[in-house]
Each structure stands twice: as C-alpha cells, then as structure tokens.
Image (tube, rainbow, N blue to C red):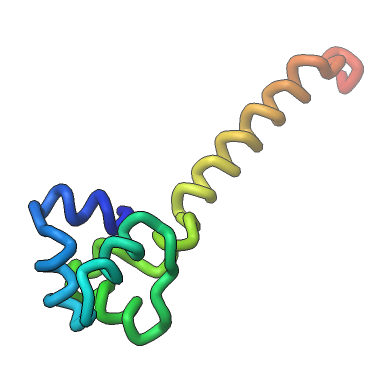
Length: 93
C-alpha cells in the first residue's frame, strides 16, 4: 500500500503523520507520500511500524514480490498453453 493511500484511508493529514513519525515538518511527510523523496532507513522503519506494517519499504520502490510471482506464473502458464496449442501432439504417439 502506498503511503498516500494509507493516509487517505486513515484520514491523516501530513501534519498529523509527520508528528507520528517524528518528522520536523509536514512537508517531509508530504514528499514521502507523493513519492518525491524516499525515506532513509530509520524513517522508513518508523513509517513501517506507525502504519502497522501496511506501508513497507517495497512500497516506496514499487516492488511487490508476491504480485510479481503471480504475474510471472500467469505469464508462464499462458506461454505454456501457446506452446502446446502449436505442438504436433500426434507425433509423440
């Protein structure tokens, strides 16, 4: 889940979220939420825990391993089906 989606869902302003994560300025939280700045390790850890593990470091980089595996498996099964549809199945007999 993106930080922006989390803030909207929870009804949190940038000011309120900045206070929760210990950021000095609301604009810091806004830049994180809009993807303009990727938080450093310490701040990313705070965001992870403050959001109850819903916003992960992967969300800042657009990496979603489980979704990627599902997409890869889907693509693979489609290409396998295409390979089988063009195969001469009678030749194996």
